[in-house]
Amino acid sequence: MISDVLAEAKDKMDKALEVAKDDFGTVRTGRANPLLFQKILVDYYGSPTPLAQLASLNNPEARTLIITPFDKTALKEIEKAIVAAPNLGANVGNDGEIVRVTLPELTEERRRDFVKLVRDKGEQAKVALRNIRRKAKDDLDALKEVGEDEISRAEKDLEATTKAHVDAIDDALKRKESELLEV
Image (cartoon, rainbow, N blue to C red; front, side, top):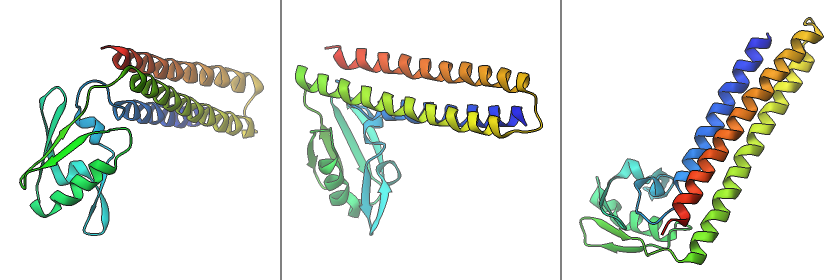
């Protein structure tokens, strides 16, 4: 029973960590990265569809991304979705075959704004981890047929797991901040 609660908590924390790293990847640094476009949804025949399912993304230069749609009729919708995407500020061009996205150079102020955004995402991830820990602790406390010593040991294991995941988020956050502030 205790091992089930701890395993479930660890699983959920692993997933929360992956989500945090994915979120960090969607914040742009100085380079054009296909991960920036990972969460952009395109209105494709009335349903929101991820851009990666509608087109191939190619990165020929540091600040340029070429998007080649699999279906040429989706070209205008892809262009609209990229222009509407928050935090990109990209110049978008369409030649009838491909969409060319050029990202402008980041200013010092814009880099600092992105650092704040990344820190906020990191804090949200830590809150998610704490919520998972709280639920697991409540589940452990609800176990009636287990001794207090075993519960105490399980709570220590839970704290260690939580600390390891929080440290991993902090490490990813530091890497992303240094990437953002690097000129």
